Image 1 (tube, rainbow, N blue to C red):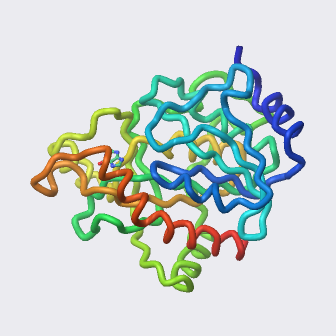
Image 2: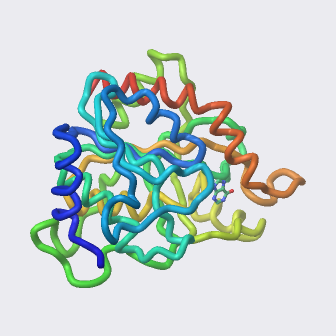
Length: 270
Ligand code: HPA
C-alpha cells in the first residue's frame, strides 16, 4: 500500500536529520553527482514500504541526504518515469516527499534529444519553459489543498531568478549554456522524424520523456524550479542515423562532470 508523502518523509527522517533546502533529480547518466554529497545517508526506494521503484537504465533508485555545495540537499538518484508504467501520481510522489522533507527549490537534470538544429550533442540546455505532450497532467484527480491550489499558475514554471543565477554561474565555471523549451513525450519509443518536425514548428528545442510531471507537481506545492537538459543526441531525423540508449548514457559519461560543476556552483550561490 502506498503511504502519503508526509508518511514517507517521516520514515526518511528516521534515517537522516538533514532538513534539505534543495531537492535534486539526477537524470539519465547524471546520477554520479550523488557521489559528491557529503555525509550522505542513502535511503533506497525499495526500503520504503509501498514506494514505487525505478527500472530505467542508469538510474539507481534511492534518495541521498547530505550536503552539497555547502547546502543541505536531498537527491533522487534515479527518477520514476511514466513509460515504466508508473501512474502520474507515483511519478510525482518523490517530489512531494522531498517537499515534505523541507526542500524549497527543485533542480532537475535530464538527457534530451536536440530539436533545435543549432544545438550539438553534448550541449547543456537551460530549460526556459516546457510543452507537456505526455497527454496527461499529474494533478488530475482530487486536489489536496494542503499541498497547493486546484489551478496552479505555470507562467513562471522555471524560476526566472534561478535561471539568471544559473547563467551567471555557467559563465563563472566556463560552461556554455544553450537555452530553450523542453517538450515531454510519454515514450518509451523515441519520436519519428515527422513528430520532431512538428515539435520544432510548435516551438520546442529539445525532447525527452521526463521532467514535466515533476515540474508541474513542484510548482503546485510551491517550489522554485531550475532544469537542465543534456543534449545526448540529435532528435530523430536530424542526423541520418538511428537513435540508441547507449548514446544517451555516453553523453552523461562525457559531460556529466561539467554539469556537476555547474550545479555545485549554483548550490554554493543560493
Ligand atoms: N527523445 C526522447 N527522449 C530522449 C531523447 C530523444 O531523442 N534523448 C534522450 N531522451
